[in-house]
Length: 206
Image (cartoon, rainbow, N blue to C red; front, side, top):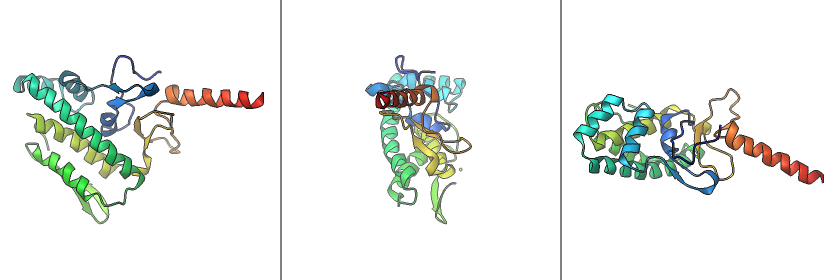
C-alpha cells in the first residue's frame, strides 16, 4: 500500500487520533502534502477521524459561515504546528517541565463550551481531569486539544514515534507486541528501506 500523497487524502496510521491529526501534513519524497488546507477538508477530516458525526458536521455548517470554518481550519493548522513541536520534545524527554505547554493546552480546552477537560500534573504524572457540545470554532479546537490531552496522559512517550524512513515525517504509537515498529507503513517506508538495504549489499558485494 503506497501512502496517499498525490490526491491529498488524509492518512490514518497513527494508532491515535492525536497523531492522525499531526499527520494531516506530511512530506513524502520531500513534497509537502496538506490534507486540511481549507474548511471543508477540515470538517471532512474531523468526521473521518470520528470526532464529529455527519449530523454534527451538518449542524456546524448551518451555524457557522464559510469564513468561520476557514478560520477554524487555519487555527487548527497553527495549533498542529505547535503541538508537533511539543510532542517531539515530550516523546524524547517526558519528565521535563511542560507548565507553559499545559497552560496553552488547557486554555484551548477551557474555551470550549459545556463541561470541560483539563490536564493536571499530579504525583509526577500528567492526568486528564472531564466535555461535549460542538457549536463553534472554539469547540472544534477543544476537540483537538482533548485528543492531545489523551495522548500525553494515556500513552507511553517512548512508544510515540516518528517514522524511521528517510525524510518521512509521519507519527505513530507503536502498539506492536515487541515494540519494534520503525516505519509508518511496512509497504511504504518499510519496503523502501528493504530495497535500499538490498541495493547497498549488492553494491558492497561487487
